[in-house]
Length: 315
Ligand code: IPE
Ligand code: IPE
Ligand code: MG
Ligand code: MG
Ligand code: MG
Image 1 (cartoon, rainbow, N blue to C red):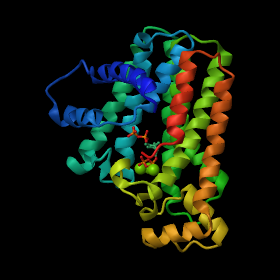
Image 2 (cartoon, rainbow, N blue to C red):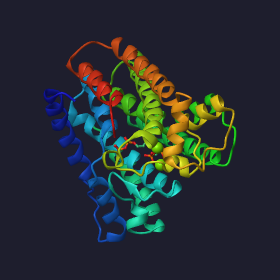
Image 3 (spheres, rainbow, N blue to C red):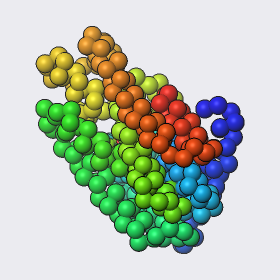
Image 4 (tube, rainbow, N blue to C red):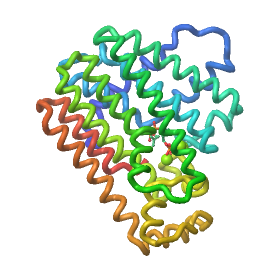
């Protein structure tokens, strides 16, 4: 990110962090609240709430109004991560031990449940926008994410997952949340329905590119930078864009037990990394095209800059 843009984002991030940290109903239940605070204090990229704030501001909304929807989106995201790490049996997230590793599985399930409740409560506090409609979107999105996570798990035990079936799965587990982040921003600013539709389409394309990149980073990233264990997907027999293309190109499915070095070599042989980056670049290009149809102002410019940052991310 360029420095002036980063300074602007830092101001917004502070608003979002402050809102997320406001958990008013604090009772003396450290078993419940300590892991929640632990998770929220870990430094995630916070791209989803930034998308909500910027989407609202692009249509005349104020950060102080849209911050509730933004915090709700990030809280919901954090709920999915806590439960995802149990499902994926991952010990590291954001460079730190996952909740079920630092505490135990029961405590992590409870923390995830709590984060979900806090997300719903935060959105109900939105001072602007059609609250029942926004709550409806949050509810439906949550159900679709669970469908996506269910498919992701089912695919671990399936040999042949076609590319379009995989794309449907990542649309559900990841893209719908990024889509909703943008949509709720538009709704919180009471933008017109056409613009909200474009924001959604932008978010969906961005979300698809984002998950394909996430699969790519599972193998190619630097573990210390990524903050997650490299090779986790391969170890769990996840059907990712990498393994699906490799199976299609090699006509073989025998690579799940290879070590990381040999798996990477095999991928290079079939030019899988290049093909994958072309696929996610196509999604990012769709995202840019959607953005280009929105009114041009400083906030839509920031959405473009955020897309640039994501396109080039290494974590
Ligand atoms: C991780 O999301 C989960 C996916 C959808 C791939 P992020 O990469 O946005 O995670 P944080 O919030 O920055 O840790
Ligand atoms: C992300 O899937 C989807 C959700 C968390 C809902 P991943 O399992 O690929 O996410 P990471 O890689 O653990 O962050
Ligand atoms: Mg995972
Ligand atoms: Mg997962
Ligand atoms: Mg992943």
